[in-house]
Image (cartoon, rainbow, N blue to C red; front, top):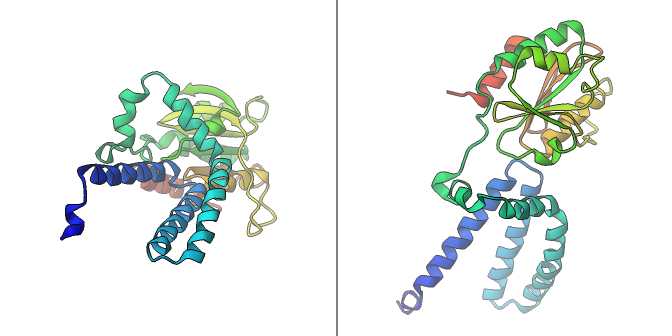
Length: 260
């Protein structure tokens, strides 16, 4: 009974603010490889608090020293996310948008941002028939700004004619990846991280490795058209599905972006 009497209103607010911060950070990192590191740090911190409360001095000192050094590692590992967060704070209108980003009931879901999948499906079907190589990355919850900044920003409406013309082999913009976000073609000729997975079949080239690499690091979806075979592949959550027909591609896109 005495324990409850010593709990102040500020303690409750403190706990709620920490929970809100952790929830917001989790949503920021969700779908990326960094989320596993984040959860690992939280687990170690929780274990440290438990052993400290139990007065296990040796283990408490060991975990405390790890957490002290881990703060520097935290900055190194999450450098891109910290940089984006600080840039966002300095941008105009940040606090007016804060409610939509950090309140539990106003978290903006961005995984259903491809309203019309038909232009993507039609373009991939035509490029498959002509064996025109293509790599299309479609954003979901994770922000892909760090990858769009490596390419050329166009911010155009999605049409099958535009997609096909960009990936036409004589177009200087055909190299690299096209990034689609919020139902717009945001950028082309983007550079993506390449997967080092040894499970990828040897006949699949750099385009497929790049598609797998972005799917391993984020929750984005990649659609690939092979220049050698014309086969369409679909990459999601680090898993690659090869030789998908146009009808199957449409079904997958509708399921992932327009489930209703």
